[in-house]
Image (cartoon, rainbow, N blue to C red; front, side):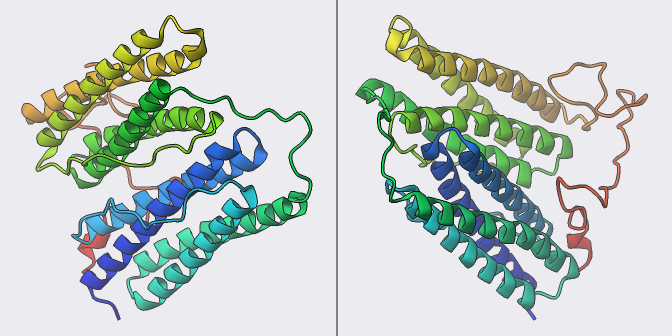
Amino acid sequence: MASREDVIRMLQADMRDEHGALILYLQHAFMMGEGEEAAEIEGAARDEMRHFRWLAQAITQLGGVPTLDRTEMELGGTEVQEWMLRDVRAEEDAIAAYEQHRDAIDDPRIKALIGRILTDERAHLDLFRSLNEETAAESGAGEEEGEEKPAAMDGEAAAVLDYATRHEYTVVLQYLFHSFMTPDDEASREWETVAINEMQHLGWFGEMAAEAGRFPLFAREMVHKGEDTKDMLDADLSAERAVAAAYAQHAERFRDSPDHADLVEILERAGENEEFHIHMFGLMAERAAAEQAPHQRPGVGATQPSRDGDASESEPAPKEPPSATSTDSPGFTVGSLKDSH
């Protein structure tokens, strides 16, 4: 059977595949615009993000380092049926890889995790096969009469969208990586919360690009890995301050242009979110610098404990074991893998 190092390498390969599928499905959902089909594909992308997190947790519990690389998927194209065929192939490849890894691993918790992921992947395969059949049946109909083509986007606005999607994609990965690697449970939860918010921003900017007939830019800058929790928070504060200033500057530049009203609205909304991230990261950094034990939620206030009850400032609330019925994360991996070898 596979050694611990082999298991880590397998799970890292699975992380790369999940990352690649996530980007593939998001692009297809954005390009398809509003509608039931796009919403279903976006739901599959959320599943892949959840798998990405579960695999990272398992890797760190085994003593490994999660990867932020991604399997290269064939992007581009103009036909929905072409996109659905790519999604079908991605799911077929994922199922084959997971089944091979499951059969090579003897750790029952890792096998259970892979089995849980496989239930989603098989559902995704059914979804994409169904969508492929629907689009094949509609492919001969051509464009509907009077269908409007997306309005072209000027170069300045396109450059701002490219900057925004590149930044948001980068910090989603950065904050997730920090959440995986920190030993501070409270900081980990907060990083994950901020990463989810940045994922929303990526969706706003990506959908705007797609509405203009442009493929969203899924490229990233260098991701800060960090040495400890305080070092990570310092880097994240720097990133948040820079983007908040940039979004404010771009919004002001386009403010008097009626053609860019939607872009200004999104820039301002995202910028306000970034300001709150600065607030949260600042409080987290203060606690890390003072070496205070995690006991309350940053950004809420000194009198608000992290859980219901009478937890005091000097006495952290006790951790609760993961629920066996939880659908958010596989409780059979959390906190126990590293103790079983």
